[in-house]
Image (cartoon, rainbow, N blue to C red):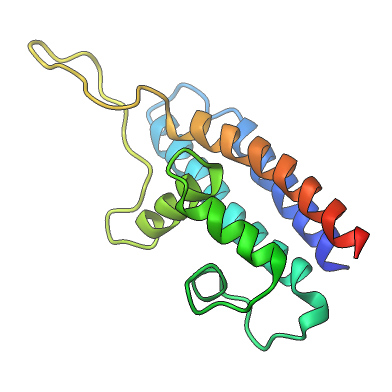
Length: 154
C-alpha cells in the first residue's frame, strides 16, 4: 500500500469509528469515549502517514510528527506549510496536536458527559470531542488534497 493510500485508509477508518452507534445501555458513555479516543489515535496515525507521504522523496529516517512539525524538522516546503498551520490557534492541525498531546497524557482526552447538575454552570466549547474531531478530519482532508496538488506540481 502506498503512503497516500494508507493516509486515506486511516482517515476513513477514523471517520467510521466516530460514526459507530454507541447504544443507550450502561456502557454507552464508555463506548463513545473509546470511539473518540480510538478515532483520535487513528488521526495520529494518519498524520504520521501524511508526513511520510509528503516527505517520501527526502528519504527521511524518521517520520514522527513531533519532530517533523517542530522547529528542527526537515526544510521541506510541505512541512513548512504544516508547521505554519500547527501554530495557528484556529487551525485543524493546532487543534489536533493539542488533543494528541492530551491523548498521550495520563488523563486522556475523552470526557464523560454529565447530566445537568443543579447549580452547575457548564463552561467550555460546548461541542463534543467527536464533533470537533469530525470537523478536524474534514479540514485535514481538504488540506491534504491541497498538499498533494502542490507536491504533484513539482
